Length: 83
Image (tube, rainbow, N blue to C red):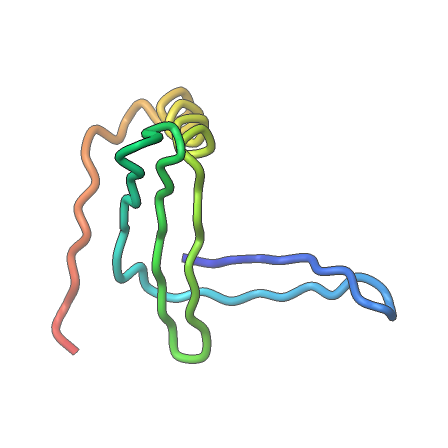
């Protein structure tokens, strides 16, 4: 997984790039307000680590976009080799 970020700074726009292997995908559900569900994608690489958080609506939009664009993929499996 690769993450590219543009961030404003005093001297202009800074471009950052990082990423690594996805370690966990968490679903944080609020029992009182189920529409506030958050999906967290946790990753860690050699030099980078972080969490990408998506709201329920963002995750649904991403899912629909992927479904329209990639009709070939029916199922995703993560296979990790021995280190």
